[in-house]
Image (cartoon, rainbow, N blue to C red; front, top):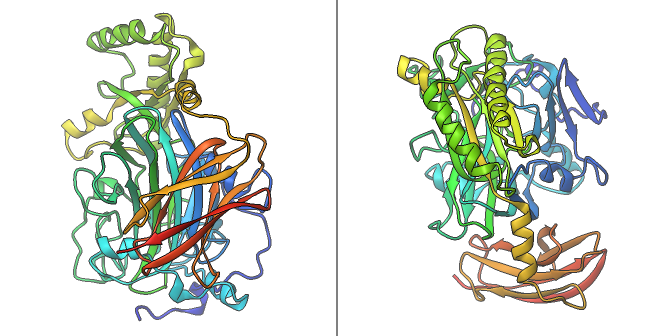
Length: 496
């Protein structure tokens, strides 16, 4: 075991906390609720921005019902105002400011007392593969099936950890991964990597250096923010900058996403990932307008670019134009935030003056929180002084294509799964009537134990993915439950 854990620095379960929301200043977290605006369905729907359809989801692993939830930050100190938080401990205690050098929120201890889960269940085989066999603990895994309506998928996140800064360079290398499978992608691909590399995002791959172990040289410090001094009102001692994931995809195909975070080498000292709400977008084109230092004036050459974009898109009702302002890290953070908004608003006003419908424009501003290059060089700073424009996919076009391919069914039912037998994963097809309130596929082993529950959000003909690569060979019955009643079963056959 690592670390001598002092009672004053470890929170065991936080059993005394019964508040629905925890907050300090403007940063708040909210536990999910069984129903209503704060249930899991709405939590995951809030991740979706333009051009992405959420078809189904499952909570595959969690140390407790406190391991994930909503976060909100009016000041957007991480570059995000709200979204999903996943942790290796619990969301309680994160909003106290940085009061501890190493928080371990052992919410799984409470789960064990309730007889619901054991620590040994809560590993991530997928993370262990990309971490070359290092043992994981307290994993939190959420899976989604989504449909992009354009050819590039992206989303934004921040990874944070209590392992910073003392355990940089050690075996306690807590990590986050974002796996995707689907058409055009070979196997299971991790997208949560250090920019321009295939290195997984972790404590050792992005940091400002360490003091206790042999590694003292920072690793990818452009993307790191130290919080040892407690300047950010979040418990974690260090965090990444706001990171963007991008992946080429095939429009209107279904992709399976798996978000995983886990403690590595032991179950002490928590880590978490913040995923920005409405940042899951698909887009067909992306453009950048670059700026001189401290300037918001649009260069003549970029005005020509915007003129051409306006001509191309002002009469095209498909999709939205997502406009986001950014700066380098020179100067005060608050002033940079204002400057990024001024730049973004300038591009919005220019496009409106050229006839683009304001209802088709979505504007954001990120200040210095989201660099695309190093700020250590003038060239990198220039690339970071930008307004990015994305042309999103169209929900209307997706609905049209979906309707054209659907033959009305008389009742909700499971249709088929393919391939079957399968070695790694299988796609389950179903048809869900429009008036169904709750639909889920429950997958069992032959003893009747529930292996997974997948919630189907889409109505009409839909599909979801079941991952069986870590299961033993055999038959696994899958039953569709519609508004609390069984609506048919099929048999999934795993044969490695």
